[in-house]
Length: 328
Ligand code: NAI
Image (tube, rainbow, N blue to C red; front, side, top):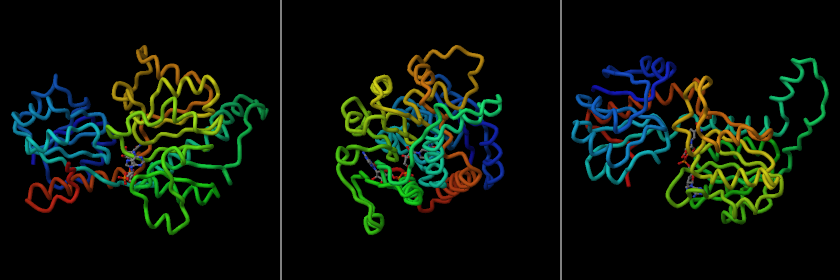
């Protein structure tokens, strides 16, 4: 199969070439857009990542160009118009889980960095400053953590939190029976957020939960609480979060995702003037930690993404069962 791979970095090429099961791969380092759609002519499939948009206009153009398959090399599919793809008969296959532990461990790394300020201590000590002023944290042991979403990543994160001895409450419209049996208590979103010291988001972005963390839900958190988002930027109303950081209602913020990330993340913009004032404001806070969508980025996850992506392509090519199809 002829596959056009968009938004590729060197590490994508390395893993995709290593695990390729005899497909013809063409790599593009830029993302899929309507302006560059002509390039997709002659390909059977596209391989897309989190910030490649496949909206109705793009999907219609792909259909005209003869593309019948989109291989998402990620779990989330909020960037694809699934209804339109289904109408056009374009199959959408994804990688539903690739080392959920990778993202869960990154969420914990963000909590520990923000709490114990190891990033500041590292720089201080290198400058010969051995003072502890401003480095005080809090014990995670027995702290109240709200877990929003208990699927693959939420479950892996639950196990880590349990190891730290946290008091965990969860919200998920589809509670996990195994976690209930393990003692996890589910509530409504409001009950779960109420008085939480740490809130961590592990649910997919949908039309229903867009900006679920906003001025009114932020008020439910304990004053000075920590918010961690390793899921999707659109779950958070960024302007409301900035306002809460300014009043101190929010004490710490860890973001691995950002609503407008597609213009920023995965690129080296160190020589550019950042035009996005919201992210510039966020970066200016001493209690905000931003990483550029690297939660998934472990060796094990990259191997799994490549293996499952080619498994999906092979199943489509041979007319086999499409286990990882995204349907309405
Ligand atoms: P999953 O599909 O295994 O679990 C998602 C869970 O969220 C399900 O239990 C579902 O019932 C629940 N859910 C749905 N709507 C909800 C809502 N409004 N409130 C609370 N819970 C809700 O997905 P998985 O693998 O755990 O991934 C979760 C999200 O993490 C993905 O959708 C993606 O956005 C993000 N992700 C981020 C990565 C990163 O590198 N930062 C890498 C992979 C995924």
